[in-house]
Structure formats: structure tokens, C-alpha cells
Length: 314
Ligand code: FPP
Image (cartoon, rainbow, N blue to C red; front, side, top):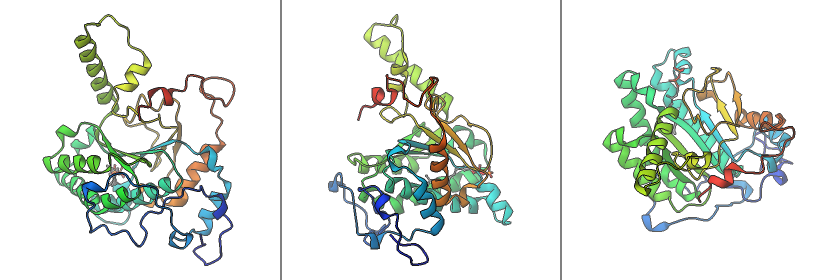
């Protein structure tokens, strides 16, 4: 790996052995991936094909203990509108710029071997926005999937969508199903896109699913436990996020992953989402590693009943 100013980086050795190269010169978004391709192995390429590492990024990377990275990062991508307004641009220009930040974060997390990344793309509350903005967001998502699904697939990323897809426009539903289907066999990072998502709605859906199951088993008197709730969430099978990042400075959870973030470290940055760079992500990871995680106990040890592994179903 090389600094942007051309100096060889001494941080190459600290990168994980299974660095994934995304967006390499062989990747061609115009060429759809045939369904028959199936799961792909990790695409490790020579350091020459890795993008340049800026000095600041290298400095932050050096501070990171790559063995103690979060397993699951969840992100509330906020501030697109303000980013655009500050530039006297229409709000939608902020959303378009936000796609580029999403791409950077996805790529960097995959390279760092993060197991799961969840991005809050569209909430149940976002329907209150003007129709033109909603339509633009839906078009943007479709455009993103059309252009980048082949690359995500080639890099062994498994895409899942969490939320209520049935209320999305038919075209979006088709693209979402296609992305899930094409990448279903991939074994690398899981990229969960929260789309038409609400945390309370997810809990209501989970409770109703549990009720239905209990009724059909004829065991309605059976008490439900945490593991049962986790198993019925949209995120079943994913570890709970250990880091929640929110951009643009608001100190709110905004109805995001209410159950799952019980023990997550929360990192809020003033940076607006379209300005959230790779260095910003590395900074969040450095901050995460400074925190002492006690899970209500006295030490850094995770509770013996590892919730993540108990709910993991593959
Ligand atoms: C909030 O900004 C952001 C959103 C409503 C989500 C849109 C996200 C993207 C377009 C990123 C792309 C994501 C993927 C998965 C490709 P805001 O409009 O609420 O900003 P404001 O608070 O400044 O008005």
C-alpha cells in the first residue's frame, strides 16, 4: 500500500491477511453477474491495486488494533440535506453525494474484515418528506444497486434488506429481491440496508411473528425470552452492532435498531454524511477502541452468554 504522496506505507503489515479489494480495475459495473456464479472467494489482490492510503488514514490505521475491531457497525447516515443547503444545492444533491460516502464506508469495512455493516437508508418516518425527494431516494437506491451489485457480489458481500419491503414501490422491491438473491450464497461481509425501516415497527413485527408461531404450536402460555425476540427480528442471524455511528451531530437514535443496540458504543460526529470519509470511519474505530466495554459488569469481558453467537443462525 502506498501513501497518496507516493511514500511506501509501513502499515501494510498491520492490515489483515484477508484484505478484500473492491473497486479494482477488473471490476466492471456494466457487466451483470450471472446467477450461476454463486458464492465467491475473497478477492485478494496485490498491494498495487489497492487505492492510495492518505497520510492521515495511515496514521489512524496505525493506532488501530485490528484484532479488536467491532463485528457489526451500524450507521445513521444523517446530514445530506444540510450538506446540500450549505452549498446552495437542492437537497437531493446531498443524497447523491451521500451515496459516495456509503460506497467508501462499505469498501473500507469490507477491507477491514468487519462481519456486518448496517446502513439506515430510509426510515418509516421518511415517507413524510416531499414526494419528489422520496422518488429521488428510491431512484438513487435502484441506480446504486444496478451499478454496484456486481462489484459487491464479486467481493463476496452478502446483501440483506431490513424493514418492510412490501410497502416499497414495485421496482424497488424487485431490485431488492434480486440483490438479496444474487448475493445470498456469499460468505463475506453482510451489508444490511435498512429500507422502510423502523425500530418499533420491527419489534411489533417480531412480537406478531412470535405470537403466530406460538399459536400454531398450540403453546401460547410459553414465556418468551430474549433469544426468541432476537430470532424474530429482521436482523436474526446478525450479531448485535457493537458500534453505532451517527453523523451530523444529532444526539438521537431515530428509531433505529432499538433492541439490537442495547450494548453498542455510540459515536456521534458533527461531520455531515457526504463528508464522512475513510479517515472519519477510522477515527470512529480508534475512538471505539478507547472505550471500556463492561456490559453492565466490572471488566471488559463479554457476558458469558454471548448473545451474538446465541442468535447467530448462519
Ligand atoms: C439523511 O439525510 C439521509 C437519508 C435520508 C438517507 C439517504 C442515504 C443515502 C442517499 C446514502 C446512500 C445509501 C445507500 C445504501 C446507497 P437528511 O436528508 O435527513 O439530512 P438533513 O438532516 O441534513 O436534512
